[in-house]
View 1: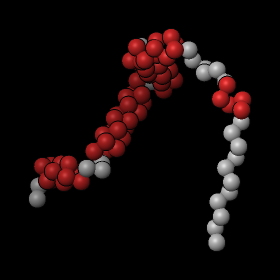
View 2 (view 1 turned 90 degrees about the vertical axis):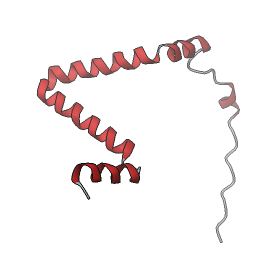
View 3 (view 1 turned 90 degrees about the horizontal axis):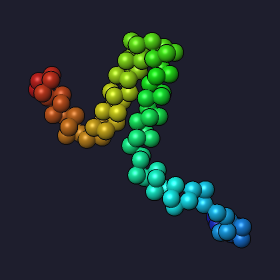
View 4 (view 1 turned 120 degrees about the vertical axis):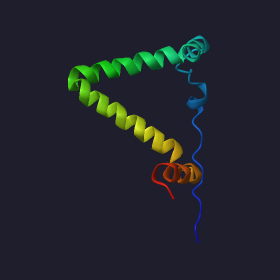
Length: 90
């Protein structure tokens, strides 16, 4: 009934392409990933402060933290049940 399409032949050029980053560049990025991440985060934060102002930026950060928290613990039904029981009672 359903037939699979034959696999496309691999391009011979694809195997010979040089990697974009050298091993030295990869090691640098791995070693300094925290600093690079924080620098990018603070640049974005600075742009938000200048474009939106302090309170709107803080509101966006608060919503991001709330979303991260819900995303992290939302799938854990036992955590949600304990949270609701602790704050809203049985």
